[in-house]
Length: 121
Image (cartoon, rainbow, N blue to C red; front, side):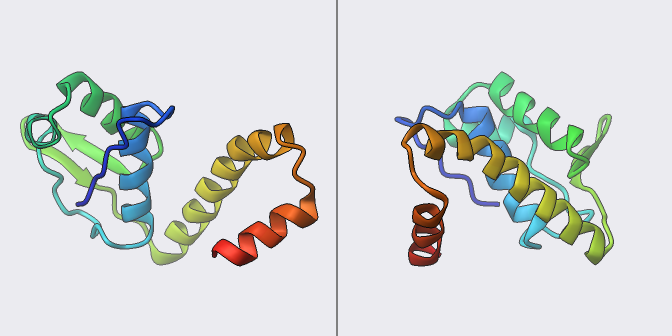
């Protein structure tokens, strides 16, 4: 599990953690049923509040990407491979819808955006 916090980002830290762990689960880097480190351990390693990590875990749980077992910890939810593909697609679409507003505000045309995606991807 790799998490990098961008301190100067406008994105809240809990959301940065949520997005990074969701990507690691959806791309298979975090195996189904594998145990995540405790909230306290992650908070200590990252030097941030337990409440921040708890909020990220709650978002992951709401997305059905992890589940918690009281007294045991948090685990990556098992999903069939095709289920992960559908979730990955949904996650990408939701993220793009959020980011699309930014591109529209910059008056970036669809063709310009496609060129940017081709160049950067």
